[in-house]
Every structure is written in C-alpha cells, then in structure tokens.
Length: 123
Image (cartoon, rainbow, N blue to C red):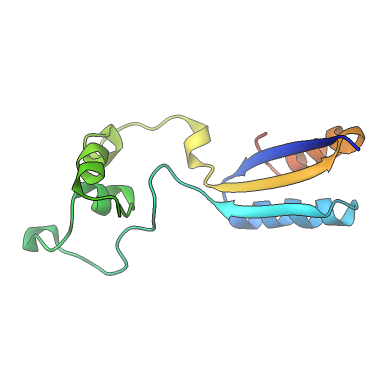
C-alpha cells in the first residue's frame, strides 16, 4: 500500500489538536503533534535581569533558545536579526510552531489535506 506523508504547521496546539481529532474521526490513525522552533530549547525558565549579567547570551534572552553545543551557537544566534527584538518578521510560516505529521494511504491523501486545511493548517 502506498502512503503519503503530510506535514502541516499550526499557530497553536489547540488548532493542531482539533485537526488531529477530525483526522481520527475520519479513520486516520498515524498522527503526531510536536512543537518546533528555529532554535533548540525553551529558553530561560526564570525571570532574569539583563543588567545583572546572569544569563548565557542574547540568543537565550530574546530567541527563547538553549544552546547545549556551546558558546559558538549562542554567538551565531545573537547575530540573527530576530535577536534584537526590532526585526519585522512578516513571514507567516515562522509563527507556525506546532507541527502535525500524518501518514495516510495515498488514495486518501487529498481528504486528509482538506481536513487539515479546514482547521487552519498550512501544508
């Protein structure tokens, strides 16, 4: 049996869960939801004052990233225009941080895509 892999981005986890429920009601079973981002990790877990200097780098403060590979990755991330907080991020794709992945039978692929799109998913 041929299968189709579908990757869809959502703005919120609630949107993705609604799409997942609709897919399951339609008989699809292989579905997964994950949080994704431009940088690894969840950033700082506590409130930090930059004046104290008690933080690993600008990328951690403004990009909500953890950089376990060391300071080189933090420095490179801090050079990203998003780190300043002043960049104009007009690209809709970067705000879709929830990924729904579905593996469906090839002949039902269009049906699954229609369900996902009806719940604001971007294929």
